[in-house]
Length: 191
Image 1 (cartoon, rainbow, N blue to C red):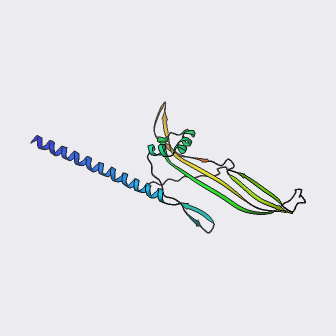
Image 2 (tube, rainbow, N blue to C red):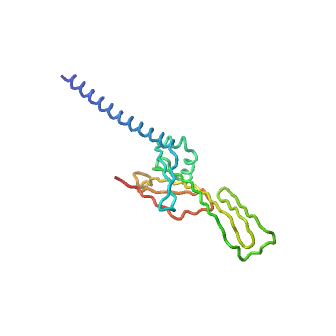
Image 3 (tube, rainbow, N blue to C red):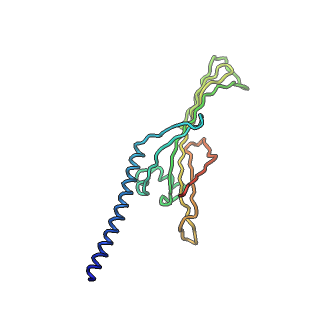
């Protein structure tokens, strides 16, 4: 009688473990399928209100070990911000290019008698190209920037112990030395 009860208890525990293991494996398969879809998807660009540029991209879901293995440069940047990788919630990278054609009068300068003066300035983040004819400048300016955004948990501190989560904090780094970050807002919706 006791052997039957133990056998049923063992069978029940084995069945419970098998169901939990199956659920874990199914979630992992769904995550990997989503990652494959995200890696194969292209950046989708569109416009809002006729003038605002917007972009959409699928999210890549990684474990900490995968992030450390495949994104060494981002991992190094996170460490330079003095953030532990295990506390990172999300990392986002966005690259921008801003360009504008310029046509403006030239004032308060000495104008050479040459018919045209070519102006060209290029560095990894800024490209200026134009021509001065008479008292007018016509040209273009293009600026490149990459933003890295890291959202991480800030732990509570008591004496020398760190535990739990005090708050979430977003850190943003601009790779363009000419740029200045003027505004950021991170909204996390919980359901």
